[in-house]
Image (cartoon, rainbow, N blue to C red):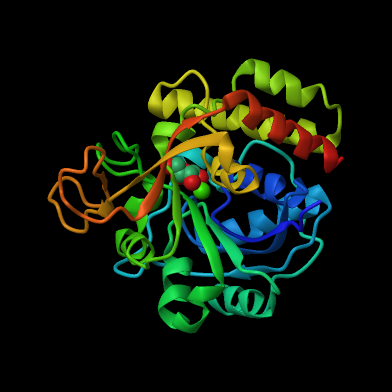
Length: 311
Ligand code: BDR
Ligand code: CA
């Protein structure tokens, strides 16, 4: 058996971030070295508390470090309409069994990357402020990064503005730093994450696992379904963030195209858009492996295994 791939999850839990934590913690193909938090789906305090509570619920204890409260430029804006007032509404969650790290997110990422005996994969599933700050502060550690698999953007349209997906919209300058870093990048955008729908059949499968964790996941996903119906009119909610983890566990779960992707930093209507040059008309160098399709059955099997294995 190959050694597991060391990963750091940088997230803003958030219902789908919570499921990404479970997948990264449980799947034996990856080793979750640590979790860093960033304001996005809620304030930094809320999403950090949520990461602690999800880890406690799942009986795992990776180090958790607090990251950025605001984007590289300007002030944070949260997404309470989707994830509720706590940023993780819908279920009773335990109080944290352990404290956050005294290190900042950037310090923890640097320490974990420096100390790991193999190159580390970074998985941002929120605004990419922490990851950009780490890359800017530690150019000497770039060679220790295997790749960055992020959830954000879209090949098609956005969800927070007509052209911008929430994670990129929340910190376009950070996304630009990451995408121009020269590191190997995999993008899971809305065009693919909207295939990972938590349908009633999926909820039944989770429920049938019969554990407290499974029941809690179902409660969380029912809340998420409710807000997705109200806000976007979608019958089932897309579980965006775990797809970026699944791409690391098994890259063949998505088909990708290596394409030029740029972030719109200005634009009167389009700030935060991911400009994906699908037909190579700009002459720009390809910089991102863009997910174009997802094996939905294998994705949900992976999620089921994780929830079952965490007990
Ligand atoms: C992204 O935004 C957040 O609401 C989700 O957690 C996901 O990371 C989808 O646009
Ligand atoms: Ca997220």
